[in-house]
Figure 1 (cartoon, rainbow, N blue to C red):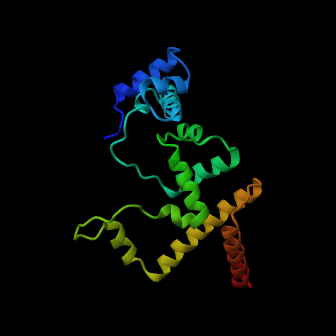
Figure 2: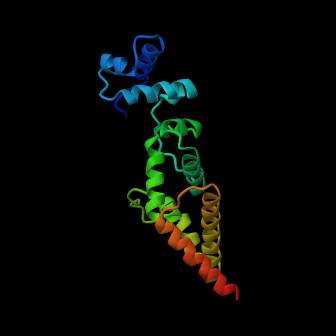
Figure 3: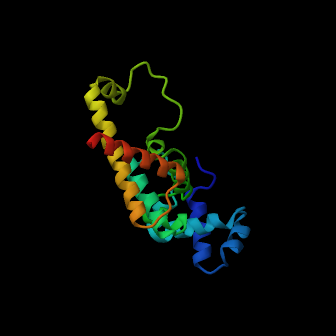
Length: 184
């Protein structure tokens, strides 16, 4: 369970909206260490209503494409993480910063890796069974699809004038050389 319950968050938001003071004043009055927490709650409440203040019980997983879309939007607009989180329906803005950092360090593959500890189940997961049953040709086709998607994404970034991390620039340059050699 979260540190603050829904009723408490609502009281804080209502105090701010009723003009009891700014973010810092309301945070101090309610004993909240960081005033940005109050700002986040107010923005979530204004955008999503009470549901924006509710603690999410299950951890939602997002597709790689969704994460890339959010990252691309951040790079193109340079809006604050909080505004982007609200626009894309995320309760926690820090998730976007984590995705961006992971993408810069590990590329698209880093965004597709599952986090956390594997289950202790003796049964293999269905997804793992499907991957093992793929033929060599199917695995290569899957790899080509992923590389094409990454290549298209990097082209979009270049076209919009966004700086591409040197690690990715080198990787995309080598892959384009390899594709030129294979087409000869």
